[in-house]
Image (cartoon, rainbow, N blue to C red; front, side, top):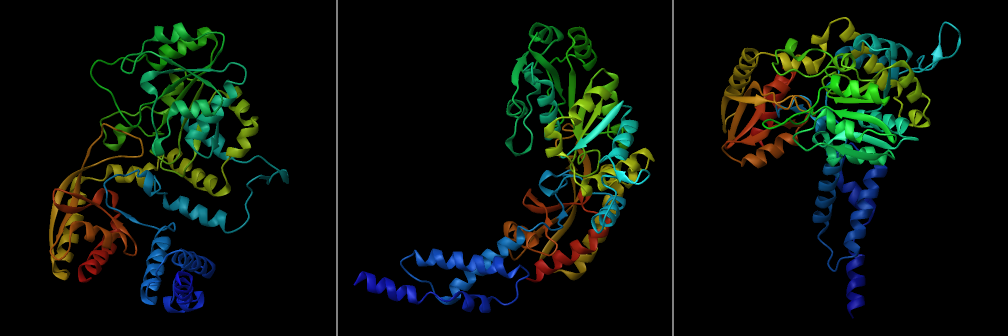
Length: 457
């Protein structure tokens, strides 16, 4: 009897085509939509009761909405975090975007020597330009800074397996990955020296020995320590490395090639050229943080070491594609031509509070005229550089503060995230806030439209 009831219930499960016809138009590929419907119907088939047809369609529609929202798409960043890892880090300069279109839409001389009419070297111009920008003998690029560290560690620890690093520099980067784990994944042995808060040059000297492959210094770019702390300078570590004939590598991470003081930021961020002058043999840093370009792991330093890295079999697996190189090439040129103000990340860091306040007043004025049911005010905030950079820096900023009268703050935030384009802010002090430091001026009208639409809903 139970089996007959179950059979009748299964017969009530609608056909895929019926559900598909009821959905209407969805801007997703048809195979993806059909596959999702089949999976949802399969789940229902395993249950005891079959929901009403309208409920099934509603479940499928919600799942499709969630899937569509997961596609890569532009958003408006109102969080006040300039280099937001979850939002793609550094926005690219217009010239870089133009280069992506030109190079990506056709063929290019990626590995072709136009002068000789034969196969050439990938990234030759970029490597020369980066070396000049950073005052290095040589440079190369791979797909991100963590990969750069893996490549360097693999190269220097083939026969001598130990990597010496201070306990105060065992940094955790985004996604829960830790420097120590990355080093060990590259096949090396971690030799920690000193204490969390105090490491001296003698701590390094006591550990460096016949099995030391390299000394690694990791810049604390995403946190800082104060109080009873001590760390040897790069010059001290470099002197020890030369004496012991051990390579000295510095991972700067944040990639600031422009002095942060020139951006109006008092806290000084170490630059690659400074690290080289202090005696590092190799320096690696990210391309998509304070450098303001695409995701890349940039390596600069001594010519013989860079050449050795490029001979590693792993180098090919980690190399950049034509789009990364196109965007990076343009960003390097902007730095060399001293047009850093055209790099969006650096421009956002420099914008004045007065400029932000003027824009905020205009946005609030438009919303007050066209959107009832909202309490709107201009507020003050502190923005962050983000992306594992400048951890001590809090930049004065300006927010649009909103309190909806007919919905909760959480529901209002959901409505803005579901808009086109999605607008992301944050809830604090009983208000929904949009920080204008990370919203581009040309997006102001879009913000007004999205909020107005959310208000009418």
